[in-house]
Every structure is written in C-alpha cells, then in structure tokens.
Image (cartoon, rainbow, N blue to C red; front, side, top):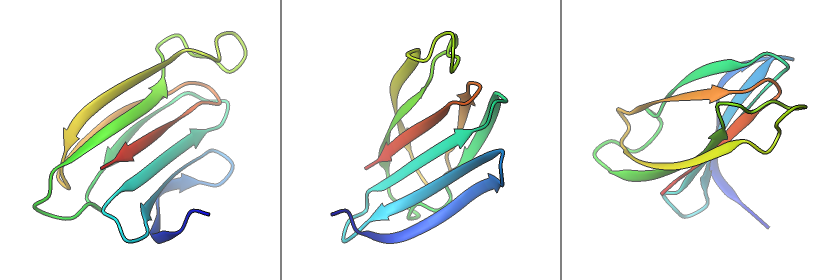
Length: 104
C-alpha cells in the first residue's frame, strides 16, 4: 500500500489535462504525473512546491518527439535533471500522452 503525506493538483482543465504531485509518507520524495487529451500540449511545470534550500534529482519519463497514441505509442524519453523549488521544467505531451517524474 502506498501512503501520501501530501497531494497537490498543479494544473488542470476538466476533460482536457491534469498534472498532480504527491509526496511520499515520511519522506522528501515527490511523484508527479501529467496526462492530456487528444491535443498535444506543452507544460511549464513550476516546482515551487518543493522544500526551499534543498536540492533534488528529477527523473523524467516523457513522450518522445515522434510519440502518438495510435501511430507510435512506445516513443518516450527518460532523462534526469538537478532541480530545486525554483526550477521550471518544460515538458512536451503528445496527443493522448503524458509524463511521470520521480523527484528525490
């Protein structure tokens, strides 16, 4: 069973897209997920919910440049970045795609 200390909706438009963040119980680890409808979308994700003065590593799982829900559903990229609460991540979401981020 997974338990959370905190959950936040970072952006949303019902029926179109949502991005949510959850903080693992008794931990500083965050998990962020985003999903979009049939329209591709660019997200500027503000990480201001992270603790000030701390450094983290974000492992980002995102749609690849050629990703498409029907024609190329297995196109994805995995990358890591150093982040803080002042960081902003630019994320591309393919049509009916999304992303997941582990922040530790």
